[in-house]
Amino acid sequence: MFITDDVKYIGVDDHKIDLFEGQYIVPEGMSYNSYVIMDEKIAVLDTVDWDFREEWLNNLKAVLNGKKPDYLVVHHMECDHSSVIGDFVKEYPDATVVSSNAAFNMMKNIYGATFEPKKQVVKDGDILELGKHSLQFVTAPNVHWPEVIFSYDKTDKILFSADAFGKFGALDFDDPEGWACEARRYYFGIVGKFGVNVQAALKKVSAFDIKTICSLHGPILNDDISYYVNLYDTWSKYEPEEKGVTIAYSSVYGNTKEAVLFLEEELKKRNVEVSVFDLARDDQAEAVEDAFKLDRLVLATTTYNGGIFPCMKTFIDHLLDHNYQNRTISFIENGMWAPQAMKHMKALTDTLKNITYTANNVTIKGATNDLVKENLSKLADELKELN
Image (cartoon, rainbow, N blue to C red):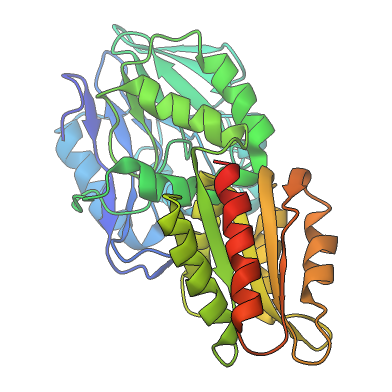
């Protein structure tokens, strides 16, 4: 794949993977992206996952067409991008490895080598001259690992952004929902905890005239760069992207589910966007995604062992782990003889930043009766007023 006349794509698609990082469902696979800049000096940008080393090395050889690379630039040391560094060095021993000092420390732990004398440590503002092209480096610690660097090709105005701006899905999958949906789930699952660090990185790259973004996962972005950057700015500030209500629930015998479905219909009658997730059955990463996308959240669960039903506890832990904030939360609890879930949910969400609570919350003692439905309608009215 030609990105520009001099910049080539040599990455791979993984359709064997079922769980990314051992937890995120990826039905459309993943891409592990890698690039080559062909110039007076040739730079290879990142490797791929170990299972695809032969395919990647063949892709590289095809692009090189008998030439030898001068540099391997390592932007990120996560295993799906760094596993073939050792093979690359064996194949091309004269090439210099370029990365951050923190990345070289990781390489020493993995490969037992310092790569001296073929080692070049870079930091903020350093420039690697290739001929017509030059790469300016930007440190981006904790986006989402501490060793991460970006690089900017001044000639073709390309930002090589490591995992930032990444997306779930192989490149041969044409996502009908567009970039944002799976990029959002990727962001809040993989990067979302580090909003402050993302903001710092965005500030650094704001000085660049970026025409193309080449991430280590997902498609090459080159149509409307401001769209992607603005979304990343919104996400990393933990601001709601849209107005609407996410309802996340668990239900044992169906009564809490009945209440949730009633509330969903009441909200739809009031023209409020609503997204509903059964936390025991649906992908919780999708629920987390929509909780961050929308500005209001309803947590509905049964009392269990005097506390919260396990899948709801797991979901709230995900919100805590990813710095959920700047939202309005409502509660629905069910407990036939001693409702306790609301108290425990609020104790957990009280630790989050800038959370407000609705005045109307609903307690169910078994069935979703007329009184419960009346209270759910009041909750729907309040949630509508917040629109």
